[in-house]
Image 1: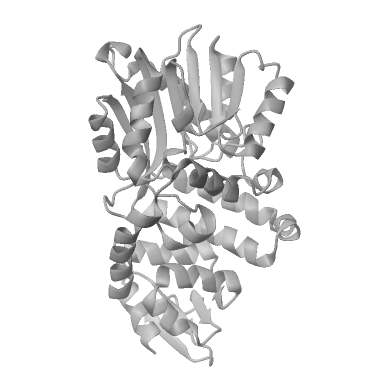
Image 2: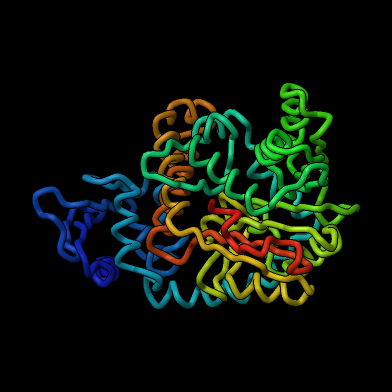
Length: 398
């Protein structure tokens, strides 16, 4: 079986037992024969699909129940596979498809305002009940947490992230703060509570906007926090501080310069901006086909060179850049654990196929952050060096 050769080439460390649709067993690599991780292919039509486009056909097969994993969780299987793959491709076909997608992204990753709004609605307006099944209870933060200790709870780690970003913003009383892609408002509310600043949050999600407006009134912060259902390109005014967490991934490579030019236009001369985004170590990486089709349509993870190049072209200064490695891996594991715990609730809300899709999304992203080419960047950006304290990072970490 050709697929067996493919899997055999992958596993240099450990291995699996592959069982075809007829029940024939094939050993790939060096599995633990007492209790081997077993991958069962239940549909004979899968073989060529896995050879031609494994990055999409494998997750779809898992969603459809055409493959079954035994003696391991999906996450454990993907961790083993990604550890062996490293940053390489599964096969020549996968490599070629990646190159084709790299070219195709110029036609598909064109996120004009109307398309951006539609993309956001497809994911973030699925329903608040879904996100409450796995996100932290305190803030409903849907971005990488900051784990100071392995003993931190998800709630503590998300609060750590908020505090870490607020320190980098170096807030002053009376300043105007803008949050681009404010989500459910956690950053806005935290800034308002910790400072006497006026905060504006913008989102393209109607559900998130309605939630933020209601929550601001409940917290009695509606005199400090204001929200708009608006594309960042249509923003006007001046702000002393600008923050954006987990939004740049939805901008699209063609609009990186547009995004940072807008930051330049909106920020005061003595202002500070903090951009928190997923990043890739692959400067020409295309959108991951499964994520693009089912999870984040229009999304694209920027590389460090994408970001630095766009910042420099707009005349802004990158005053600090921090790479958070493994923090998102831990965050995704925490989300996955909570989602599995509440799986039956999700199944009643959606379907078995949706649950399998969501499990693959969280599991594959966790494994990719641990073993592949993903990490998180925090970029502190200014117009003038005088905007930041002279003691460098001491004011952040003390």
